[in-house]
Length: 614
Image 1 (tube, rainbow, N blue to C red):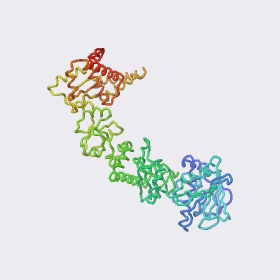
Image 2: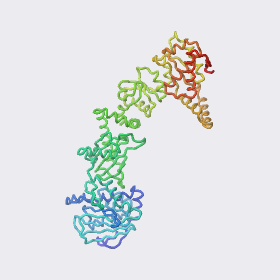
Image 3: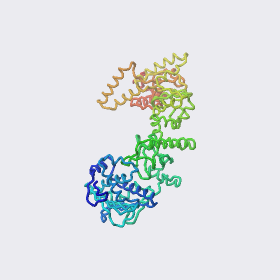
């Protein structure tokens, strides 16, 4: 900058910095949108009012006049401290730094520097900027006129201006909508509705007040307004409202518990204010990642913004805030469990899947939330806290199919957890880390069959004969037969297949409904897997020797009656295990029922042979 004797000159001068380059840097790499011009102007005005309050206690109003066809300009006025001629010179020296990087490294305490950055942001929407100001410290009024071509003019004026500053913007051809009434009202409300100054927007009907009390900062005074703010924030009534505070940085606000499960992969986000000025609608690093079940509105006077004022600087202060606010949410969970367990149950029911996902990777969260999560067991759905208290040894099945099969033969004195639902197997495996007195065992279908007792020695010969006779009947269905004693007399048979068998069966069913291309692919898969196995892949029907129907089958001499009865036991076991029936299974069921009815009625007809063929 060229100054004559330290006085402001009226000649047209040139910015020493590449103004177009700086504006391009602002619009492309610093600010997310030219909409932030109004936020920067509001911040400048608010800082000016704060500075004047420290001098004479005056100031406290910002007035915005949007662009109209009649006026041809946008105007923002404040009654803050204003600028002297010397301060204008310092301001221009700051704006004219030769290094672009220096402009954005200024501390927030540098009032003139931040005023200059706010001024530059206006070039994203305006071709011409005029600043008129009179300082509360005395001296003549000053007018600064800057143009997008990189030139500016500074003059002292004789107008009887009030103390404060007015910014006049002549819009760029592609940005005038952002200076018109609808956009100005929306932007002023978004950024400044909770500022501790009075902001008004001129309209044809008169001045409209923008500012109001912040409901998330005055919950104790007006709890209904705080809840309504949360309803507007979430789009639904929150499950609960949590007060959060961290005194060292002047950080406080409310966390609203979501009444619905967020989409998978959604990250925690906070509506963040600095000194009641909106920083961003979605700041992701104020609360811990595990707090996905809340949406918060937070204000801070001690956290540092980045150069764009759209995010927070990751420093020790932010780390402490995140830790303390997270601790406040943990306390809420713990206190809710002690005081209102029914509401905690409601909360967990809504967010259980997300909580299970997080506790697998967050040991700290797992320590205080796992006990309220629930799993399906052979004794019904149980909370983890009750499960580990009642059963020091917990067995679990990896898949739903394995659970359904093993549950049928699991002793009543033991507990079996269904690990087939999302994250439940992982959750069960980590229980010994959280509860050292607990042991966990993974079960498999084959191993459970090996645990079953064979029939007593006196019945062993009859049982072996039954296995052979029944196996011949079901050989066409790809199912072998074994006889074991299961301590559940009401259950005649159990269909048992390990995961590899079930996958092979699914591939076989798929080949029946697909074309030759995919059928050939599945054939090759079967051939490859068969070559890697030493035995044939078959399912098994486990007949329960403790069941009267099974024992009666030994005495059935009519091969047709025996075959039909066994086939129906096979179908019943499939249905009891929630296994889908194939077309051949349905046909088998229908023919077996029809033939049994015919036999019982004494009707002679076309009967099925012993091996299942006609």
